[in-house]
Length: 447
Image (cartoon, rainbow, N blue to C red; front, side):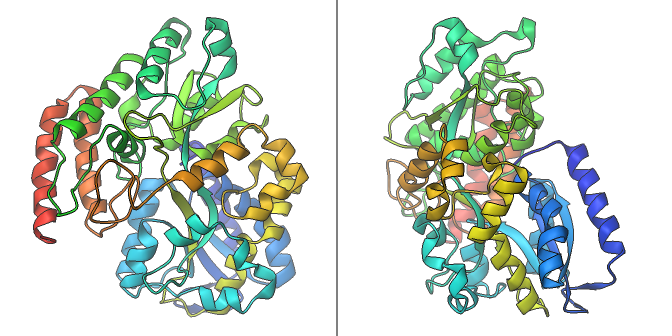
């Protein structure tokens, strides 16, 4: 979810270059003082890659070899390695979708034992909704959160003021569409809104599924009846696709979190609905042209009272690692109170990987830097309901995903059809008719 592909590639090359000087090592062997870490190329991860050698390695003597990938590529790579017990990595970033499923499969080390044995770690300081999302059926933690997030609507206050428009604290999607129409200024290169259209269950369907939820739709009913082409799911998807096609950014079918972050951060969109974790980058003057000009509203709704998702990017330890002690030392540092203070002092307080520790919101420096978005972020995380995110009971946990192993493939395949609809290559009706057939195949395994 974050920075340009060129930056990600350059940083990955730099990280590999640095690791080449530090000797061999990794999950399948080598010196225990070298560990391999696979992580998504989001701003917060890029920040830790910059800080690790000077701080963690200097203090611990443990060299960290990073591999950094865009979100979709990361998901493919980490799934392939961990599911197949490849043993290439000692630590990997996974999310709230993977953690409980992979814990059940026995692919991950449980981390509760490590955390409880480390008094300085203060596990009780971690936000409960985030901890719950990363825990297994046994109640143990299987991934330690690097940052937690919900979703909200970001808007350019200057553009709104110029049009005399006031953003409600809790807007409806109908209001958002009306605002987008008024603020769309294609002649000057400003879209009314930026929304993800990039294929991927964690790309376009992260925001889109929250729209489906609040419009009254669901992927599956409680008894596993698939509802992908039901009227509510169809209405929500048509609304989303039509809004992008009418007032969204150019090239929307290839826009994910990274591209929308850049678009909105460069002042080329009036609104953006996405992850609360984006705010830190948007408020950093070194990375954003709209720093200090952004307003934050709760996730837009239609028929529900709240609609924000619940997610965490977290550090997991594959069962295949032979360097568990060193891996935990890195994980505990990367998710500690001390690291959040270090990031704030070294890089700027808006860039702290927040949304996971209560103590962060008590730091005066962070309160000052994040005053425009901290409260709404914390409230959105608390309001997110992975048990009942819509109007009807669900058969599995998840706000913006369905917590079953088959959803990654199902969501990605349907997302490809939706992206084609955004690009004008098919219709929403056809996309969801095809999606319904795929969902029926999944449902047959559970009925």
